[in-house]
Image 1 (cartoon, rainbow, N blue to C red):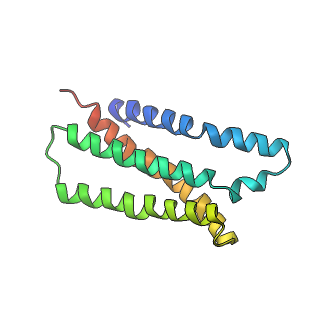
Image 2 (cartoon, rainbow, N blue to C red; image 1 turned 30 degrees about the vertical axis):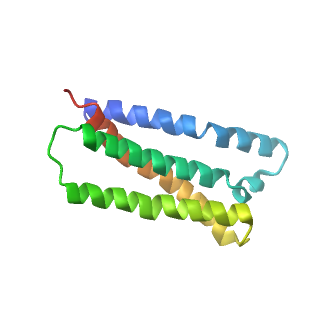
Length: 138
C-alpha cells in the first residue's frame, strides 16, 4: 500500500466508524436491556447500509469527476450502476420490508446483516478509490 492509498483508506475508515456510531449506541442499549436480537429486527442496519451505499456513489463519482486522468467511462458507469443496483436498491427493499413488517422471516434479517457488512466493504473499496482520485495533485 503506497502513501496515497494509506491516506485515503484512513479517511474512509474514519467515516465508516462515524457512520456506525448510532449502531454502536443502539447495540449497547439493547445489550443492557438483554434484548440484543432486537437489533436485527429493526431497520437500523438497513438505514446505515443505504447511507453507506449512497456515500460510496458520491465519493466514487466525485473522485472520477475531479480526476485529471482519463478514465474509461463505460467501466466507471458499470461500477456506479452495480453499486446502485446491487447495493442501494436491495438495502432500500430490506428497509421497507422490515419497517412495514410485510415479511417476518429469518432470511430477511440475515440479508439485512449481509447487506450491512457488504455496504461497509464496498464503501471501503470504492470510497478509497474515489478518495485517491480526490486527493490527486492539481
